[in-house]
Length: 157
Image 1: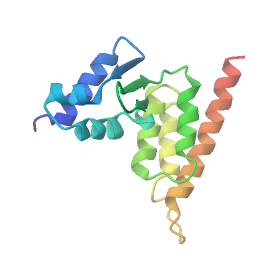
Image 2 (image 1 turned 30 degrees about the horizontal axis):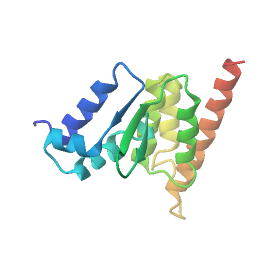
Image 3 (image 1 turned 90 degrees about the vertical axis):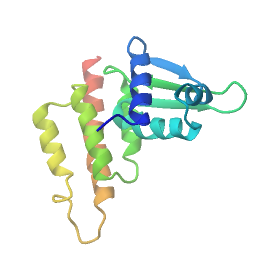
């Protein structure tokens, strides 16, 4: 199966970030470059450059507007803070697993911790009669992130 335009745009942005922590882009310029509509650029940014995947997006609209894509580094507590915000209300299994994978890749958790947490927030473990799986998942993962933040703060002392 060939690459989609979304795959190509994602690769382009990631390769532009290889040497820097952030890049500023123009949505319209990217759309012209890839010969697609600006909403295609929005789609890629909204689905592939999320905090779960280790990125923060800032956007300024209007004349001279831009999109700033920032890679959140391992030693950056912003990642954990932003991840904690994701756990404010509810978190579906797919987004929770992406967040866990990112924490593993950043070496914030070990492979065994990854497996244990993934099991604890799985649909099978959270099967409950009130159908509140996503809220429970967010709460559990939020507590894990708080503990990781404490651990990171103790390392920096």
